[in-house]
Amino acid sequence: MDERQIAALQGLLGQAGFSSIPAGVGRGHGRAWDSLSPLSGDGSDRPFFRLVRDDHSYLAVFPSPTLARAEAEAHSTYLIGSHLRESGVPVPAIYAYDPGSGGILFEDLGNRLLFHEVHAGGEAAVSELYRQAVVILADFQLGARGGFLPEWCWDTPHYDRELMISRESNYFAREFCAKFIGIPNLPTGLQDEFSKLADRIGQCPANYLIHRDYQSRNLMVADGRLRVIDFQGARFGPLGYDLASLLNDPYVTLTEAGKQQLIGHYLQRLGAYISLDRARFMDDYYHIALQRNLQVLGAYAFLVQERGKEFFRPYIVPALERLLTLLADTLAVDYPVLYGLVEKIAALRQEKQTNHA
Image (cartoon, rainbow, N blue to C red; front, side, top):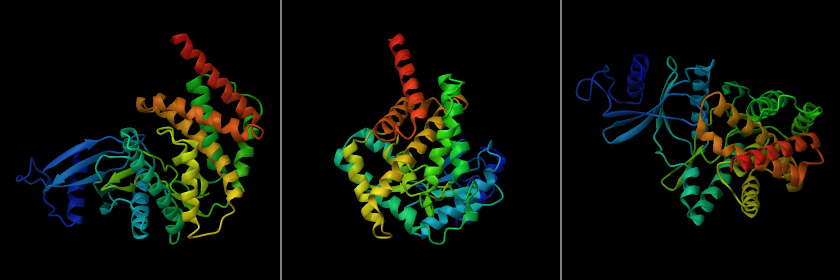
């Protein structure tokens, strides 16, 4: 932690109602905390610190040192988080925000993620947590969209065609196919199919609030209840995006029967807000799930190769398998070039595994 962050942290504590005292060498010598520990994020390089004061812990987060608009992202985090909290979405409380440094002091929810609960076992408990997840999602998308202002979004206020093409489909083509797999010459017609997919999703109603990374590592478990984190990318978009993120999460394997049951819980909760044509929703959902899957593979490949985050490597194959299954089961006729490319990549991966066995 540098001197600027230390000074900002002292200010955050003062703003939160704690005594603001100059930084020193330890408690009793001017420092306002008993202990301070750095934490690491998943794909983010934002500095995270856990501080303990009088047997209570808090989480301090500062802007990314590499993101061009890091302060804008921090401001969005504060505004969006405050709105979600006021709307009843279970997000961590924000105790203080410093516009100068972009530092935010959050409630500390601990270390337990939905991801950890799944991998620890306990089928009944996990099933209940996933039921909570889809209910919370419906409340996030419908209950919190009222009063949400587009100008709060640091990135883009809408999930739109340009974002789909440049930062999801082409991200997949460049980072995963070309750089990670090593196929620089992609098949003719692939860009046409990316455009077709974006146009199809563009037909979906998109006036709902979406998280845009709603998955098992962005849902924490505190006191037996789920809490939503990493919501700073929230914007307006189609309903199916976050549901697809959760149900096709490469970190977790859900059965098809389990997915359908969760979709039922989700649609039931949506029914408290709006009326939906289930058949139309599901058709939209599969196209959106395909788009999301492209983004995930592009992101994982980028994080492994460009950021050296090896944590993501084991999840690339599950993400590829889900993409292939999604195409084979429902969308191969609509996107034959993409389907052929994904089949080729899966075969190359299998051949490589066999040769190394």
